[in-house]
Amino acid sequence: MTVAVVLFTADLRLHDHPPLHAALRAADEVVPLFVRDPAVHAAGFDAPNRAAFLADCLADLDSSLRRRGGRLVVRSGPVAREVRAVAADCGATEVHMAAGVTGYAHRREERLRRALGADGVRLRVHDAVVTAVAPGAVAPTGSDHFAVFTPYFRRWSGQSLRGPLPAPRAVRVPDAVRGEEPPSRAGMPGLSPQLAEGGETAGRARFARWARADLSRYEEHHDDLAGDATSRLSPYLHFGALSPVELIHRARERGGAGAEAFERQLCWRDFHHQVLAARPDASVRDYRTRHDRWRGAEEAAGDIAAWREGRTGYPLVDAGLRQLRTEGWMHNRARLVVASFLTKTLYVDWRIGARHFLDLLVDGDIVNNQLNWQWVAGTGTDSRPHRVLNPVRQGRRYDPDGTYVRRWVPELAGVGAETVHEPWRLPAERRAVLGYPEPLVGLADGLARFRQARERG
Ligand code: FAD
Image (cartoon, rainbow, N blue to C red; front, top):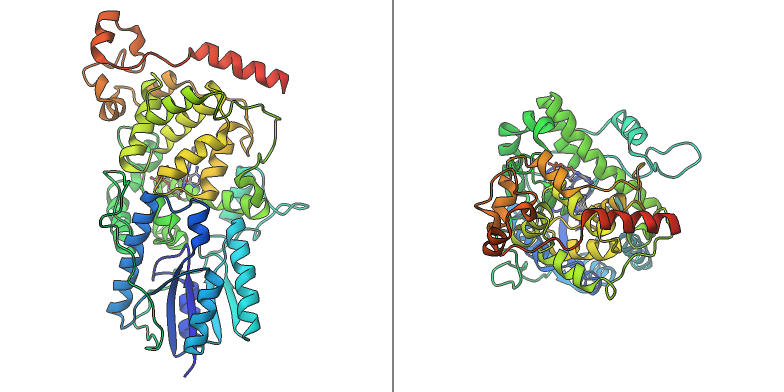
């Protein structure tokens, strides 16, 4: 009887799962394993919203495996130690897992290779599980990664993708392997009140619904803040409850401008992965430094607190930040505006904003979060690094009648479209009744400070 272990990481699904597929072909019995590694906790990556969503993903994976005669084995402890122990307990000769791109993922792989190698167990790492195209699979001549999106997109689009793999019909798990109960979100403290439900089943249902109703309108409406017409699949992609390869195939089957635009967004995800795979330190250091002397946590303490609470006095900024607190998710257009406001108008270090996002976002992702923050801050891959988004103009353009602002900023519920993005234009008596803060800083003053810093830098 041959046995293989499949270590699930950021790929918590049964459909289109190359490591599981390969293990089931190679061995008679397979141990589907998830390890709760204290290193993830120590790095602060298990913030409450993501911990809850992860718990949903694990519970769903476990019940999908049980329907196929198997189960998910969950263990806690240093990942290399746990995988080695499980492999030894069941006499496994191979461990399969997906390739990762972060510094943590690289260290994990090295440790596993060493620990398993000592026991003669082979580690097989599969590409294009977490991303559609593996980082490094396409690269410009003379470099290990693309630093500009458009040429990357051209090359990426020309890659042939594997067909999506079906979910297995049956999984036989050896009896000898012991695990713990998968965690549950019930009773977890500090969750956003409107947090989405996690898991492959919920993710597949969401995609099916959204593809029927909204995919064809995606190109036209993806920036419409009130319309909320984007897929909201980001947390499912973050935890790998959905496969990017499968989503691309499903979108192509439907075809049209909406499907193409959606695929382009999935390419952004791969683009950031290949940047971080080549430059893991970009999660904490400027990808392209401008030698900014950002305002830090102490110097800008009051501004940072007001920004975090969604009390900057700029309605669109505040709406986005309050949506984040309530849902653990924020519309992409709002993410761009609140990040530009923090890094450019308030001239605060992008890492402070990125940390706040990681504390709350259910899709909070060291790759996409840090590199999008750098993109907005102008230290990343944006070819126009000095652009500053004006929250009033952005509001008029992407939330023209103020519906999104009124949804998240109840103080402005009775304010009409003409002034909802500029409440400071209302008469003083009306403003006093609203109880909405005055602007933290004038936009012209913020812009002047940013420009001055640029000239010094
Ligand atoms: P859709 O518009 O439906 O797009 C489909 C998928 O494409 C998304 O689910 C996502 O996986 C991917 N995608 C879309 N835009 C981007 C992008 N700019 N970069 C990378 N992938 C993208 N996304 C995260 O997944 N995790 C993060 O931590 C994260 N932090 C961000 C921080 C900032 C400052 C900004 C500006 C963007 C950030 N994004 C992040 C990217 C983007 O905002 C979200 O992926 C998107 O809003 C998720 O909503 P959706 O699933 O409805 O997206």
